Amino acid sequence: MGLYFLSPGAMARTSRVTYDRQGSAFALCETGRFDWPKLLQGADVLFVSGITPALGTGPDKALSDAINWARDAGVKVAFDSNFRPALWQGREAEAAIRLRELAELSDVVFAGRRAIGLMLGRTFDHPDGDTAFAEATEAMFDAAPDIRHIAATRRTIISSDHHQLTALLAARDGVSRSRTVDLHQIVDRVGTGDAFAAGIVHGLSQHLPGSEIVEFALACSRWAHSIKGDFLRADLADIDTMMAGSSDVSR
Image 1 (cartoon, helix red, strand yellow):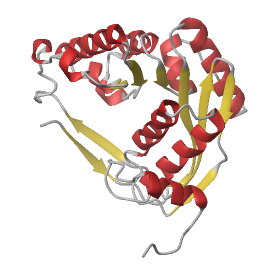
Image 2 (cartoon, rainbow, N blue to C red; image 1 turned 90 degrees about the vertical axis):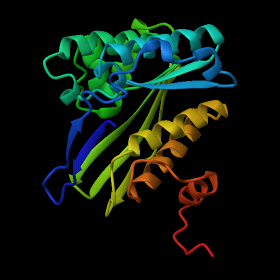
Image 3 (tube, rainbow, N blue to C red; image 1 turned 120 degrees about the vertical axis):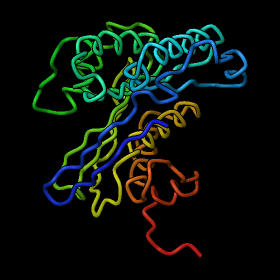
Image 4 (cartoon, rainbow, N blue to C red; image 1 turned 90 degrees about the horizontal axis):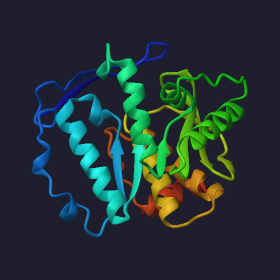
């Protein structure tokens, strides 16, 4: 079983993750084990991660097979770049090439300006965060004609349990930006990016306007910051309640 160990941060001390994935069943998987046509039956979206190719040739090949079958079947591909330097140590140049290849095959890409800069071999360092994201996504759209949307959060860290968070969603006709929220007394940050991604995919699947999608995805991420564990256990009613700003006890 692949594991990771989390040392939670406190005050000015940052959190730290240590991975133990080498030799795991996932890292050693063989591509022929997966019946992708059957697994993708009825699917609208295939969601994949940039962590997978970092773990070995077997997972990487399986990932390519899954994406190719999905595209042939008309299933949209959502790709979270998830660059983890510890998993690519000594292979950073390979990571940049492979993550870009995967992004170019995707409909929706989750990547901020730094991840896009890694994939394109450029830097996007405009002092205004919105402008930097817009410049990065414009460059990514130019490089990859199949990408329809690029999403990311912008996080300002005041301390380990106090952050500010903004949601961003770029389409080829412009960028939607959420309000910026203060996250006080954070319970657990791990998994909040996945919760954000779930909110973006849900909003796109419902064909909501970009302005509504970013607010919904931001609420999903806020909710995930309030619980232990990296799985979003909220339902739509929970997210609607958070968006409404209610803090009363639900009875």
